[in-house]
Image 1 (cartoon, helix red, strand yellow):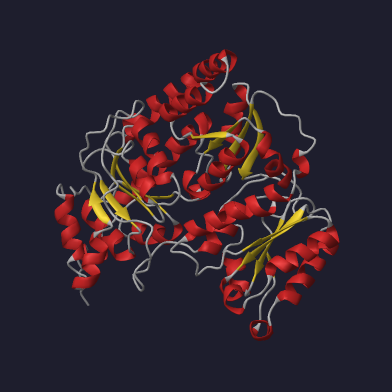
Image 2 (spheres, rainbow, N blue to C red; image 1 turned 90 degrees about the vertical axis):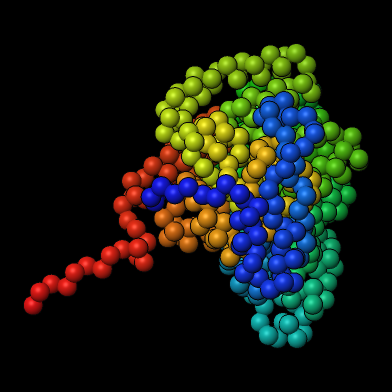
Length: 501
């Protein structure tokens, strides 16, 4: 980092100091979202050896207007996360052009296919609302848009209608349009009531999207699952969006241990994979926050068990492979050990090369989904220290799970404001910050290395053993870049002497 600096030891006092800038009412409200991981009497996690209490602060409540929250909206949670990566369906942003434009292909959801023929992830489809559509309604325009899609892209396997804010206000009947077009084209049509104003963050959009899978795919018939003959080792990978190729890296390990991945939701996914999902034996959930709803439904409806797994860093990869294998016979369990042994030389080489360069370096994280906890152990494997972590849209159970990843005394922040995050970084002065694109450039201007941990900063994959090697390299490139020690803040630079005339 730029110039050595020792951060504060007393995080509670630091929180109080940062909150002092607020009026009394805002201070009281925000204080409930900022805390320090506390001791607990719970047993330590068998893999990490850690137990702390991180669920004392409030979460999943409405952001304070005007504080520049880093959250997204329900539309972002549905279109940008759950539905958007499904490659053989067309996802229509129903409303003004802006929402579709700014959510267009930004998450690096990799896929295999021919764009515009049988895959549509990186294309933007919108009904492009104008003022007259707000006044007179957009049902007819939506119907015409789907007709045009069917004419131009006949190999698509269905359409989702992703509602933007105006749709919920003017009352467009997107369900009626979906039913009409389903009969006309005999294809899956999914209306998703994910207007951005719903809920408090993108988290409700995840839930709404999960419910749409239930109501408009599972409950409408078996589809591609009708003729599928399940096998004893069938699994679904749920909540992996193949950012930078993550799902492919994970799938390699699962298949090497003898499992058959029926489908991956929703990175590089097809509609058929979703339709076949009820035939699998086990659901493996990566992003718990965005996809636990549909897993719970499938457990109740189809008696399919589910478990959370973590493929960040070799310690968690090995633990997850063994935990997954326990759900199957001895053949799979033996194969899991063989897979772990196969990659151990790679792990040893990566740690030997990068741990001496990264050990003891401090990290602050602020991301969404599962990453504020799951990625922690990848840093631990490299000897790095987590100074603080927090969720954009976490719920209470997310913070409870975090207690098995971060140690007592770690700074915890929920829905942190732009001001708070900047002040925490300024006072802690970590060696690295991992957050999103909005935070990247202000942090770098503070002279602190940064990695974009939503989409891997144009790198990846970070999942799996191969991904760990890339992860370690990227952290080293960020932290040990010599540029950070070569400049001072402008206000600390002595003025250059004026040349004598």
